Length: 322
View 1 (cartoon, rainbow, N blue to C red):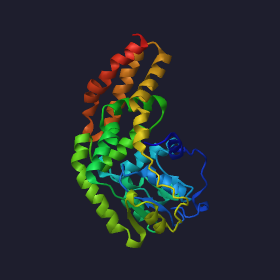
View 2: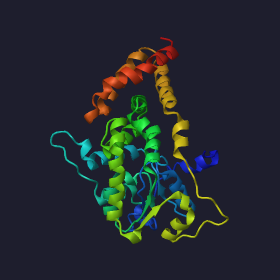
View 3: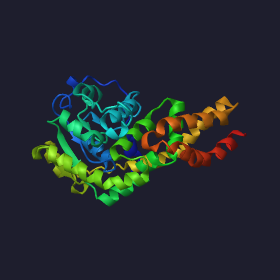
View 4: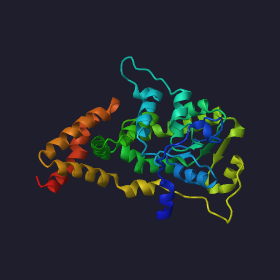
């Protein structure tokens, strides 16, 4: 389990205005940088904290920068322009981000972590001189981890509630994350994502190994500790026998209890409105479900509302006294 101190260190939300890319030594835009290409749920938090400890001051992790207003809108936009799966409408085409667009978004960072695998091919092409760290994990353990975290939040019924909270709060994390996950796994359900997972896993690792020169690639397992990582990056091993960080983002995801956070958000707004709150809840939920289920999963709107949202409807009306 991750300690309270570790959690605070991991999240370390950085809301300051960051300097332009050219002022950061060894940033991606400057021709250096690090791309952490390990798949989601391969310890991206741990690697972000490890890079912090090795002296890198600008390490991007999506959760760390989740408060930045344009973060999740960029993720949704980039996903739609990257993945053909998300562009099934007539006349729509895939137009990947240009180098200028990538520089404006992440160029000022010295390293990117959890964002990298979703757009790995583009990023390797855009930043060919970057060092690439490919963290590997047993396939079965990886899928199990996805099923209990990201698949649950993105493809499960709780997604509808999170989308409602997004709509009420003006936040966009749910929509951005779902677009990225749908495109990456070419799926609109947990079952479909699990079926595609083996192909995604094998093709991702093969692509990274084929694209990155051997001298710029480190295939890494956390069990190997600091030595191979430090040697690859030309950094000294942390003194005093410091253990490699094990910053488990599952703790943060699960302890956050998305269902509770979402329900509280809805209840707060509904209580403030008082009159007609159930109707507002239903209307907002239906509109968001129609809008964001999207693509091959458009049928998800009615299914999710009749199951997921329906299951909390009684709780909402009871809490409000209707």
